[in-house]
Image (cartoon, rainbow, N blue to C red; front, side):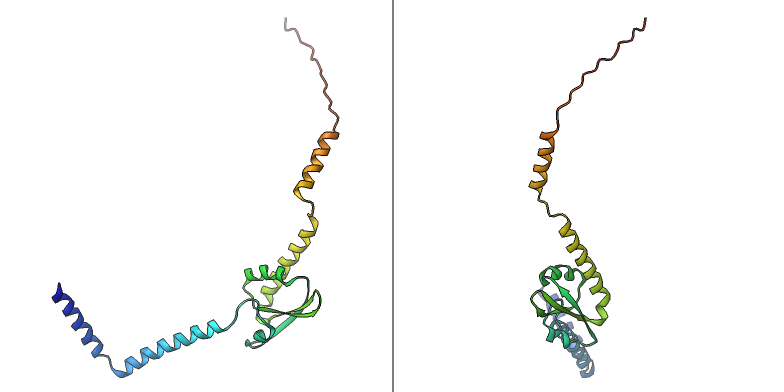
Amino acid sequence: MQEEVNQKTVALSIKTAKLTGKVLAAALGKVVRALQKHHRKALTPQGRQSVKKLMNHYGGKNAMQYVGAPKDFDRIAKEFHVDYAFHKVSPGHYLLFFKANQADAITAAFQKYSTKVLNKDQDKTSILGQLRKLAEQIRTKPKEKQRTREAVKDGR
C-alpha cells in the first residue's frame, strides 16, 4: 500500500516537472482571466440600484414617469431580471430609469404591474363582508314550501 502511494507521488512529480514555463504561464493566465471576469461580474449591480450606478453601465438609458410606491414595482421587476433605478421628482412621482436594451422586459414588467394595480382596486370587499351579505340574503329569503300531491294513477 505504501509503495503504491510512493509511486503515484513520484509519477505526479515527474508529470509536473515536464511542464514548460510557457505552458504553465498560459494556464495561470487563463485562471487569472477567469477570476477577473468573475470579479467584474460581481461588481456590476443587478436589479434595483441608484441612478449613479445605473448610469455607469455601458449602453443607452431610457426613462419613464412612474406614479405610486416603488416597492410594489420591485416585486414584479425581480421576475424579469431588469436593471433599473428610481429618481424622486415629487411625493409619489418618480422617474424610472432603465437600460435601453432592456426596454422590452421593462414594458412587460410594467404591463404586469398595471394589471395588478387595476385588479387590486376591483375586489376590495373582504371575505367577512361577503359572508355577511350572503347570510343576510339567506335570512331575508321567505321560506316557501309547497306541497303538491300527485295524482296516483291506477294501473288497473
